[in-house]
Image 1 (tube, one colour):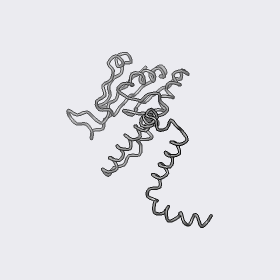
Image 2 (tube, one colour):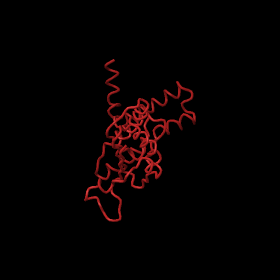
Image 3 (cartoon, helix red, strand yellow):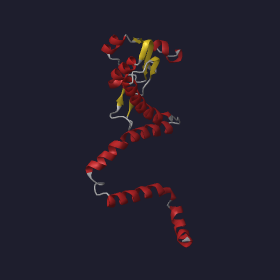
Image 4 (cartoon, one colour):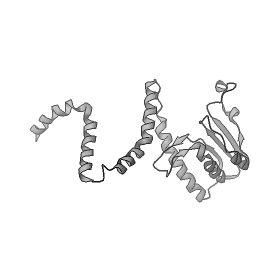
Length: 190
């Protein structure tokens, strides 16, 4: 047994740079033999759909790291958005009430815990409305987004009396005439 391992050791050492690729190739071969539906077009498309968001995030992170910066918060923000939406639906069902709610979702998220992707422009109406339902009487809601092209739904703003407070929340260093700041923010009182 020891002799066999000593013969494999040089091979493993030389292929150490390719070990993950070899393991992946072995896994694909085993699945192709054991699971007849593995190489079907539907399954391959399903696999690509499931890893597409990780690919987009990895590409963005690669560009950030190559530029000499680093931001490890992207993955946690994506996961947090999915958890938050699941909690929000449950809290509304349980009729919970809060004095202050701060909503600052990512612009986009695709978590496995969600049935659909989060798009803050599309989904802010339901998100803000559900959070507003969770406010106690006299409670305050703050909503902000980093999506610079974001436009609040006019009917939502009127119904909940949302008041834009962006200028009060952007530090002087980021205030430039004719340019939007790093985020936009609104406030409502129930």
